[in-house]
Image (cartoon, rainbow, N blue to C red):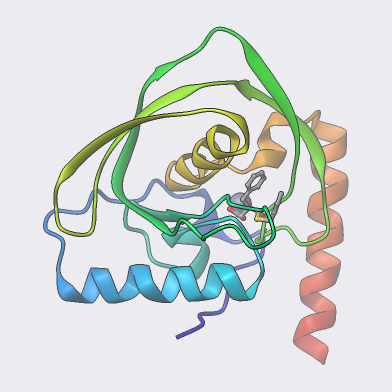
Length: 172
Ligand code: K2U
Ligand code: ZN
């Protein structure tokens, strides 16, 4: 089912999520809920802390071509095990920081290791938007948001806008 997404500032978005010990049916169901929530947003990635679950679990599907087959990807305990020296800059957004976008520079290619939904160890290289997205999601597992890469003044401006947004949502 579709879960509510936490909005920054929220202490749960700043915590380091716990590794997944064993992949239970409950965690697999949570991953399916996260995919449903991501597609509904719409988004191309989502991390468990964004729905208030502090486990190291992310989902992503960066296929944007119309008509191309979707590629729902579930990663338990994802780790970047190698990153390129060359970087890419991408105008990032975040489902927990709605309608705010800013350029973030990250390694252009990363090798990621994770456990899939069946508990199999996977390792894959990512480039392009997939590389940006998987790094953005793994940052969420370490309590890091894309605004943490911005100058303090810009970060504070965005945070103030989110505090105002949350106040308005609480009233409606
Ligand atoms: O983690 C999230 O909040 C979902 C993010 C993932 C993402 C952010 C920046 C760059 C790549 C992925 C997005 O809000 S999903 C919405 C979106 C879609 C396409 C491009 C940028 C952002
Ligand atoms: Zn995000």
